[in-house]
Length: 392
Ligand code: AMP
Image 1: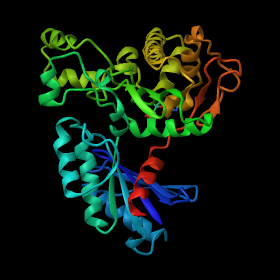
Image 2 (image 1 turned 180 degrees about the horizontal axis):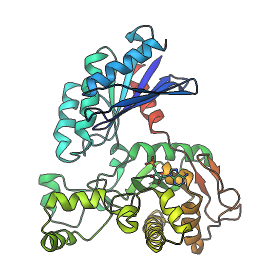
Image 3 (image 1 turned 90 degrees about the vertical axis):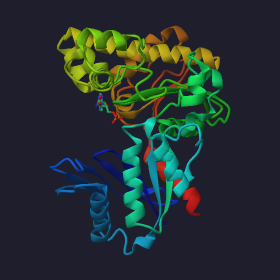
């Protein structure tokens, strides 16, 4: 049976179609610049990647083109063959601790949570509605980024602010990238061949988050009420003193929206280096002796190491640490910088093993007190697996 895993952004839509339960990717693609002009899409099939330019004014038009591609490439002969469609949904608030079939009530909840994720949930809803319209008979499933973190206890997810903010407005830590942290947890359980273990998962991409996981359950995570919290990221600040916001507003006459935009889009690697949000550019800058790039990397590593140290103590030790996402899977330098900073915990990098990209691998020496692994994440597969549970 065929299952689609969908990740709809405000102007993009990524998909992977799986033959399940074999978990084999049949076709995948990305639609970009939806509704903002010069739109195009790329389709990957049998190892070939094809890029096509076509205007689509909204997600419905993009999904219609996607379906036509499935027919044109003989991936399906009838839409009935697509039995399930799993959607990445960023915010499920406190209500959803697992994936669910998208009923009218669930869709209305996802709409209610827009105030918690104004940049993401509206886009996810557009994707859901487009597929509901064009593939009405498939079971649609919501897979929430926040769900995996719902196991955190009150003392982990509450902020030390007036309790009424939580009760009345839902102000609490929700955590994000949950589907990735869950995948890493499942994979590490298989690698370690243990069900009871203490794990620190590091999802280091353009956005980044770190989780503390005990016996398969998340007990703390670095992102918070929004995905702007936690470690420093490509363009996001991560944790800051909230009082900086009114101070800079007053000094610059900028609006609150402008400052929030600065914290989300002009901070992190980009803000410090003023060159780029991409760690490859930062690494090139470091090689050229650029002081700001050197500083940006030092700050990036410091923030990550602080979270790992915090979670090491919270967990009462760690059986493993794993690195994932664009930077975690690909940057030898960032992994080395982090692991070298953890030497006091008896962690020792295997320099040669670390020279790989995008490969599942142990990268510490056999006498390292805590083994560290690269584990390429696979959020789409998690979405397809969760969807499969409801179509069987
Ligand atoms: P993601 O958000 O998971 O797609 O990760 C994107 C980030 O991964 C980019 O911004 C880059 O900083 C980083 N990245 C990808 N490839 C490499 C690489 N070969 N070396 C260092 N960083 C990389």
